[in-house]
Amino acid sequence: MTAQSDNLRIYQIMVESFVDGDNTIGHGTGYGPSHHNGDLQGIIDSLDYIQSLGMNAIWMTPVFESAPLDNQDHWADKLDATGYFATDFFKIDPRFGTLEKAKELVEEAHKRGIYVLFDGVFGHHKKGLIKPSPTGLLPAGEHNPVSYPESEAFYKEVATYWIKELKIDGWRLDQAYQVPTQSWTNIRKAVDAASKETFYTNNKGEQVNPLGYMVAEIWNNENYITETGYGSEQNPALCSAFDFPLRFRVAETFAVNESGVGHKGGDWLNQGMQMHELYPPHAVPNLMLGNHDVVRFGDLLQRGDIANPNDKNYWTRHKAALSFQAAYTGPITLYYGDEIGDQVDGFSKKENKDTCAIKGLCDDHIARSSAKIDGLTAKLTPEQTDLKNYATTLMQLRIKHPALSKGKRVNLVANKAVYIDHKQSENDAIVYMVSTQEADQTLSLDAEQIGSKGNLIDLITGQIFTPMNGIYTIPLSNFESRFLTIEEPNSTGPIIEQKEIALYGSGFMAQCDNPTITDTNAPLQDTLYLVGDFSDSPWSHKETRAYQYKGNNIYQVVINEKRGPYKMQYATKGWSAQYTAEGLSPKLGQSNKLITSGYGQDTAIYLPEDGNYVWSLEFNSQGEPKSMMVSKCK
Image (cartoon, rainbow, N blue to C red; front, side, top):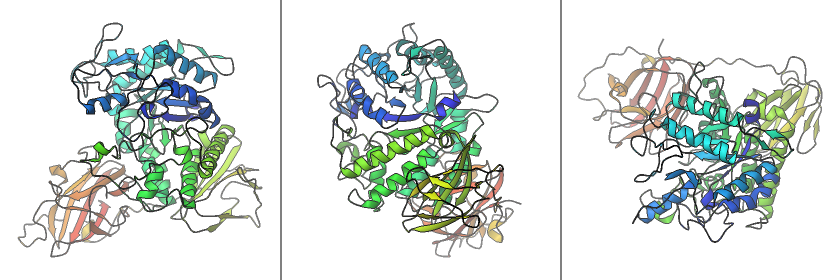
């Protein structure tokens, strides 16, 4: 299944906000700015468009019945429209369509060579009403989350029922961390078995089994995704999860993230790609740029005051981000509308969290806008059409060149200005490059170092680059990307330069054995804590992560850490004081400026080895932030 899943090009659909294909049904309410009347017929009507993009799978948000309770309020009505708190996992929500319509959708998709993935919410359901399975099973415990392993049999029946009933090809797994990895192992094996026992006729007239693909949604760092989703190499749980850590790095490089952090470069992308080493061998990450719970890329460009749809740079940066996704080894997912640079008019700034839901303008639902399907629900602008055509070209490149979807990646160059990879699968070898700056640049690449002994041909423009004295000279404009096929790969492949990673600092702030002292003249009155996405204390204030005063206006805490990337702030228990590193990505073993911080302004650092680390903060005598350092203990 891994080889097939690498080739997945998934188109994500938020059903209630997508396309209204049947005006006699629909929820008519929901979170976000859409019409809230999307249905299964609307998806059927859009299949030709999705196929034309080069996508070969659709993932639909939940379509199971979410029946209203007596006298429920409008907030519950809105939640019902999302499908994420179902009442009957074995019935299609009548406001989306019928079982017969769902069968038609799956069959029409399969006729076009498109896999169909349902959304599996196997950790929670609607409070106050949950209906039994056909065999009489019910989930156990509370409604959110349910109890495991007691609920495992029920959700195993859900997972296999729809494969047998509709011949769906797998599941996207909502909040997968709510289910223990051993139960995921058991549910995955049940899905594998049901898929092997089920057949349908594909677009080539062949009798095939459903794919059986399962992809987890876990918003966290690589270590947490492994712990709660992938499991261990010895006891694998799930085989695929969305690459949330890299998605945020892509946004921070080509736009900004939801908190406005951006202006990163190719080195930031490369570090994110290197984090895949933390996953077990069976892991197949899936990269998306957006989904129904995050802000659209176009709105992030506007949030960062970078560009709006009237600016050329708006479209250039979209192309850069899409190109990076297209060059990714493994499955990819495109959220509807991202292929045309969609955004929500009048929205870009972060709205007040206490009032945004009333306006339909919260960050976690603003992307649920009505679908603009070319020729069906909208007439695209020239810029939207151009981006759509570019996205289609990228998907065709992934189809024709296995080096992109399943090739071995070797990074050639990664700095503030550019990111360059060598990708190879058997005889298909490609150099992918993308500018991460607005200024034009000219690159000089050594033929031997990139594993080439002939011409490089740009797969999009057709340009040919011939080496002169063993050097290729390649221009790269503002956020431009290139896919260069290596006409004659050499036998040795690219040459990898080994770079030494600094671990240890020097001086007082790098010492791990400084004694704690009591000093009434210490610059801070309140205790600071190292608060972040650590597995032992996820964004909570833990006493073992409390800073101690060491003298010289310096506070330290020494902790045994696990290898991996982390995001954190240095904050009091009530968050009345928060600090972070200037630039938000300090160098290990070096002194970095410490600044006052706020929500979303997190320090991000990669710890390349397990072991004890000392986290140091320095203030001036008035208690104003001065410097910080993270160093491995010798």
